[in-house]
Length: 557
Image 1 (tube, rainbow, N blue to C red):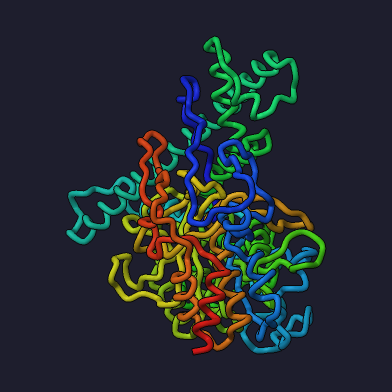
Image 2: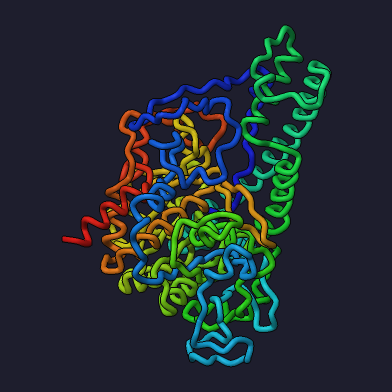
């Protein structure tokens, strides 16, 4: 799923030397400030995604510029509701609490469905992966594991000579699923081997450099300026350059090892099934009224980060500024640590629409959708109701024109040209580096299925317990776009969701000469470069300053 942090892909060419130099590409607008050496910069400013390239050299969305100039004499005309379908939102966070959606028709904590919408005490939203007794699903399996479990039970030790033609087709599908499942498990073992090897190499390289410099506090610049005169020092320089450039510390390595452990224990474990916690009839995909009102759940870290990008309180002197203003966050919990289930996604979309959401952010996704038609019907419903749906394109370094990620805007199948939702935006992720590394190395892409790109690397936002953190992913790029859409809606309420989609895509910043390294799924593949403009339908990066100008022009016609 999109919320998953990509496991570090360690290339063992580190032993033999890997280039750390980067070419600087001249952008369309030349800043007046001294040129930033992005090849040696380890971290961007915490608010880099808000910045304007012509003013700062950072390829942000120009929201700070928009507030300081274009919007400084304007007043928002309406309140916008953005539903965050995710793993949960910390409703007590200091930077979010005042911007949460509140169901005014519901009396808090009286154990009654006061507004008769089918959900008891849904004050800030609803939780579709919780049970009536207050318990919640935290971990769940991946969809591939669920399909494998179901088919393996049916076809394990099957005598293929007795199968009908229809059963043979199902058996062949089972064989493909079994092959995919085993490949993923083997990949998990390789990733564990990679991360443990990196851990050992990092320690060895650090020991060598500490001995060489005579200090624990050597810098990245000192490492870069090293002129190794032996194989050992060359090894240390290459390993530590990789470590420092990718901000790899002991905490990150521990997090990655923990994630691999959880994938093995839960995600790829066919014997694990927590669905009994919810207490629904899972086979009944038409069932809608189940769950509880705990919209935070046991792990609201991902959803809280997403919510902050969209709607953290602006200008309150603490934390961060969200992109939108006069916007309420509706929390809809449907995404566990594992793959979300189609039934829950469909119900989450319907809940958001029926309770007044103008925009739905979906920072999740998966490679299999066995009950896609259920989700399709919910997407159709939202589309007909004029709700803008924003979806992260995914973190698998794939061309999703060829290999779709679900949910998708296309009804019935994943073939381009089929009937599709008109108010849907799929978002890829960019980094803060204006060179060949402009696209995030994990981001999916596709000039038909990805609509536009937005910042998704080192995005600083809210996490539970009044804390803040940088995170990466198309999960972060999607709420950048959702926040931008909400900002336009607040100031130009007469514009439809379809018009706002067209404005956002039509006002992107394009870099027609910008070549980027295309993200690669397999680290053993040779890196390729393509024009950035060929990797999405719009060919560009979202820019809220330009989008607001376009909205102003359209609204006055």
